[in-house]
Length: 428
Image 1 (cartoon, one colour):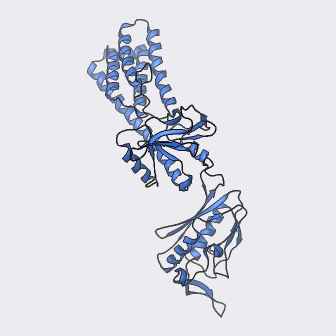
Image 2 (cartoon, helix red, strand yellow; image 1 turned 90 degrees about the vertical axis):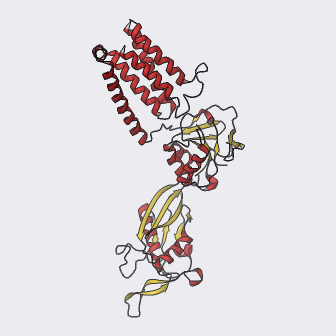
Image 3 (tube, one colour; image 1 turned 135 degrees about the horizontal axis):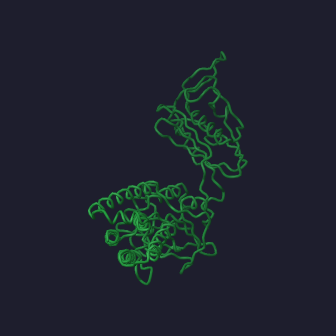
């Protein structure tokens, strides 16, 4: 009787928690009924079978079928559903209790109130495990594209941010499908933010909940996509069951799920070299930042030699450079630091030199200062002076390399990104 009562409690809990995070169990699925409503019926029938069916093998087959269904939902749903994990765990505990006669006799022999206490502790423990799993943001990924069916092969019916009906053409470019409540979608969105605006896919919000319009806007902002246009659709395209997912048209509708698979399909740029140097907030930092503005986002093609002086140009007052400290050789052949317009740009060339070494690229021309500088070890600095000293390196890879320069506090950072010529190949 006690075990039967516990199954009744599970059926009542199913009624209370009548919302599926993936949306899969909320939609009519089996003979017009939702999986949640069928779950209620299943647990009520189980409570009856445990008490009234004498053949233990039949009850075990019934219980085992329930465990199998839960695992199928977890594996095929593509989303680590907290509710499904909780009900599956509790069902496994009760099934195991029934299958071991000694356990069954023991639980039936203790007072009902104590059983409820034990049951509550078990639920609390499982809830903690579920929360830990959620913390690690588990998701299901697919290594290769899977062909799916679509009623409208090229088009996806959506609404935009103003609730206006919009049809987007998946033949023009793919769609990244995500959910506003999906934590593990953040990584995919951050990767999308790294692409050039014209290379970004449509952003489509699905598995909708209340106020998802505003929540999606905030989610995009948090991941570097402020004011990015997005669309909403109640039914995900291409029979998608997990997010994030990418859908595109290539003679037929295809999709992949999971951030790793999306990155593989879109061929995102890859960081191959990075360096940072100290950049105190003085006149030298002003000059380094100005020089960085001329070098930032420069693309070096395979086999091409990059020249610092050709890219940055002359350092003159007309261009905005100010006096900073430069290392020069005086008439006695001694090196000294003197005021000089553009002094400080060598911090940028030095950071670039370190990034080039980090990427394993070929250095073509390099000179060091005659004196030790504060931002690099002896011989590891890169001295530049327009029309006199240059810093050059060669792109020895088979892909374009993009230079990214940024300042964080008193640090000057140079990054080299492998920027494949085929990046964003899904875009026409």
